[in-house]
Length: 156
Image 1 (spheres, rainbow, N blue to C red):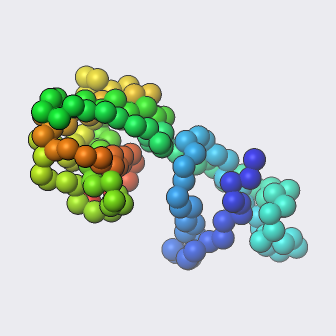
Image 2 (image 1 turned 45 degrees about the vertical axis):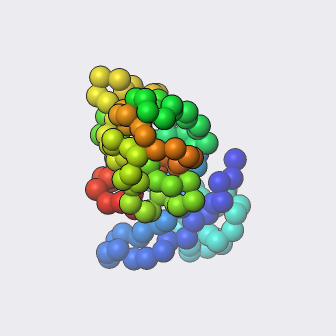
């Protein structure tokens, strides 16, 4: 399978370190990371046989995209989110359906609109988030932050 490979380095971080950017990633899996030494080969090609040096693995974890949830106005709202290698330190936030996930969470109509997973109700395959009592009406977007790099800014 070809996921848009190869990816060129976007910057030089140090004398012996390159930075690569793969964004957005929507496939939750473990990927092999292979490197092409640009001496006698054409590394910019999509012919993956030139990439002979395996340098590691990239493990993508988080929520499966495209899930839908339904909560009754005036009642308690529990979100059960399916995914891969979910953790109790992961977060969700609620934003308006017309906004992307980089904005601040909705404040009106939700008891909690930015919260961590429930520790006693979260497993590697299913994370539960308790929004509390919801008085808002309408359709909202649920944004998931897998806590690998932190979830301390609204854009995460």
